[in-house]
Image (cartoon, rainbow, N blue to C red; front, side):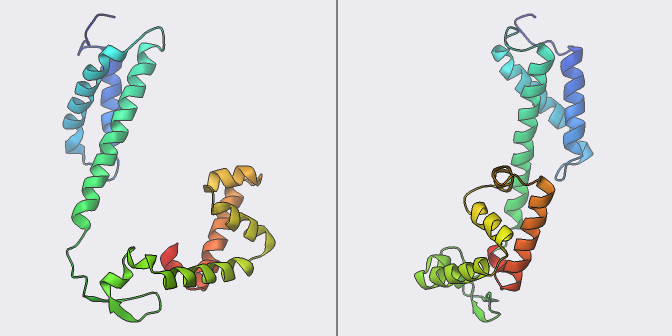
Amino acid sequence: MENQLDPRDPVASRMIRIKACRLCRRRGFVPSDRPDIQQELWLHLAAQFETFDPAIRPWECWVSVILDRRCISLWRQRNAERRTPVREACSLDESVPDADGRAVPRHETTPEAADDPTRLRDLERDVAHVIASLPDDLRAVALALAFGTQNAVGGELDVSRRSMTKAVDQLREFFLDAGLDQYL
């Protein structure tokens, strides 16, 4: 390899073209974004070129890793941009229904309002009641999920991914039936 990136490199050109096409098929992107994405990937690859060491990994592998990471970053940036405009300006004094269906000012439904000690005690009591009413196998899963991810808990309990998904769906139903849907 030379000391600079060759824009005619067939490996890099092909990977950039493929990864740009894949990214354009993701939600939030359109096919007309492809040239811009390709240019961004070329620029990123050129900026990272100095970190290439053939003793650590082959050229194809290095290019793939660098481009994958940049595509993930581009996708995350685009999703962050998509979420921001969706937020609507609204008054915190506007009435909205709470979990019990009563009309309350919006500011009472914000996460900051959830720090109210009375609400937290009520939530703890409601969750404890639901967990106590669960069958033993689901109770074990629910208690383990309080401290780990679904995949981690499945590994600890020696439960398949499909069984964990079923268990989580069943737990969700129990909590929905108890009226705790806003906390799911």
